[in-house]
Length: 57
Length: 134
Image (cartoon, rainbow over all chains, first blue to last red; front, side, top):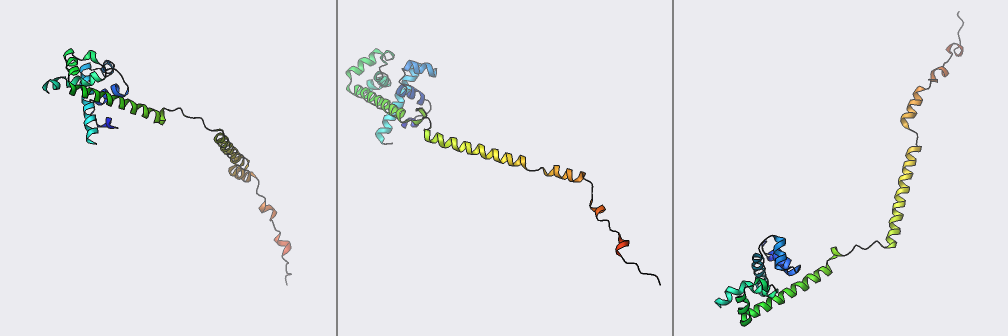
């Protein structure tokens, strides 16, 4: 799957929110990072996924 | 467009319903911006597709399924093979125990008196005819 495309920092955030359907606060608690970091990394991961899918890669 | 750039980082959060984390002015902007709203919908569509894909993967993943018990026919075959192995091992052990111990046989043979020389004692004087001296 394209999750493998993500660099290590974005991968757990994306997995926890998109696949495990956790809230940003829950993901932040699990990863022990601020909620804002989860939010920005999820956004970046999704943008990357969309660009890869749009590019056909 | 510059206004959109400042709010873009919150679009995924809005799409995920995490509006409590999003500033009020960003929510206000997205409600009135067609481009941002389009991107929010794209995020929502992507999230739903990912959830469907993960559910599909969970259904297809064989490791999460319970391991079925062996069928009765296979159980009978396995029991027969096990019984044959046990019987074979018992037979080999019986043969090994019933065979005479070569070391014990050698010890017994060496402790018996040697009778071959006494039995072979020959009286040479009686068998050889003596000639009369002239």
